[in-house]
Length: 131
Image (cartoon, rainbow, N blue to C red):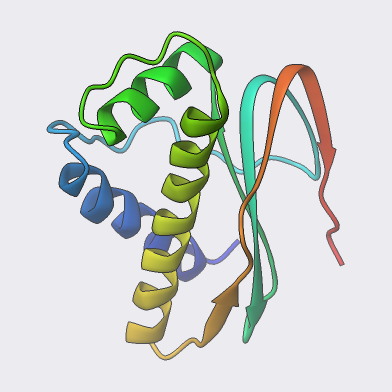
């Protein structure tokens, strides 16, 4: 995969996360996955259409999803991954992908994004369309 399609997402993380209260954001262990994904935790998918087409998939284990939701909600305790916590995490996927779309526009690539889809549980399987 061409790095020009990955860099906007990295830039989005480095831009958005500090604005939400995450002081230390580091780029580590990046990898491309095949089209079959199975995780235990929270998966957010966002569709991308336009000059490039595909899906971006964000994954967090459940405990980290609750911590991120808590930070996004100004420190409100998140003991259960309830509807409010799910909404916060979905909004994070939306913010990251929308920000990446802006970075794509800055390099002359026009894209639109879908609303996020959030899935969570044990051994959640997702098959992404590759063509």
